[in-house]
Image (tube, rainbow, N blue to C red; front, top):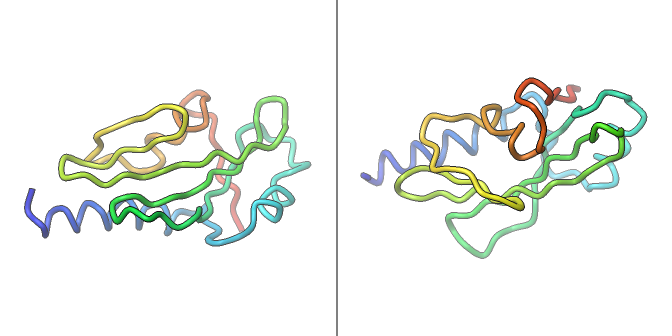
Length: 122
C-alpha cells in the first residue's frame, strides 16, 4: 500500500472517531460516567480519548456506555493501523477494515446488537 493511501486510511478512521457526534475528547472517565449515568437508555454511549500509545500505529480510545442493566462500562478500544487496513482490539479483535466507519463496528465493541448503540450528543 502506498504511503499516501496509508495516510488517507489512517486519517479517515481517526477523523471518523474524533469528528463523531458522540466524541467528547480528552475527558476523564468519571466525567463521562456522570454524563450517561441516570439516563435509562441502554447502550447510550460516548467516545473519548484514551492513553497515549508508545506505538506509532496504535491509537487508544474509550467508549463509555450504559449496559442493558443500566450500569456504566468504560470499554477501552485500541485502533491499530496496518498496511492492509485498520483493526480494533478490546477483549477480541476485528478487521482489517478499509471502508468501515466506527459506527459499523461499535455494536461489536460494545457486545450488543447492531441497532442498539445510541450516541450521547451535546
